[in-house]
Length: 120
Image (cartoon, rainbow, N blue to C red; front, side):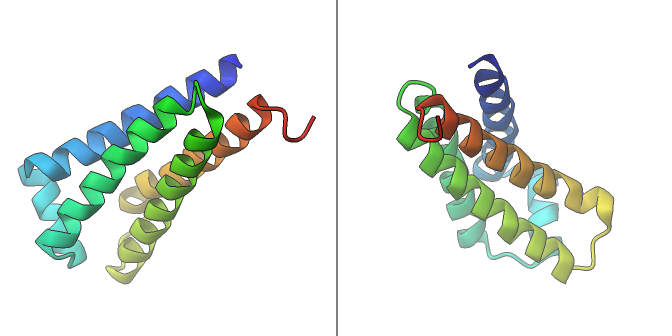
């Protein structure tokens, strides 16, 4: 259970930061958006989905099915981010946060699944 909490909190912090800079229109976020060729509307939608994912994985600590669904959603958002970075021909350093998002979201989904005993 401790590992589940730690990984979930780290995932929530990562995506809370990511969603907040998108939704607040931070200059570095807008520069990334423009570099990747993402429309302003889609950028805001991604920020909202990330924020919803943060709430979902946090609630998942009390009710795992919601957390599992939210973690899968965050993983899919991160897969999309990797695709955009690859399309922009970004290197490992610029793509790494999205890959980290996939790994943390997958770990969260797996750990929350085990926490409800589906595989025991």
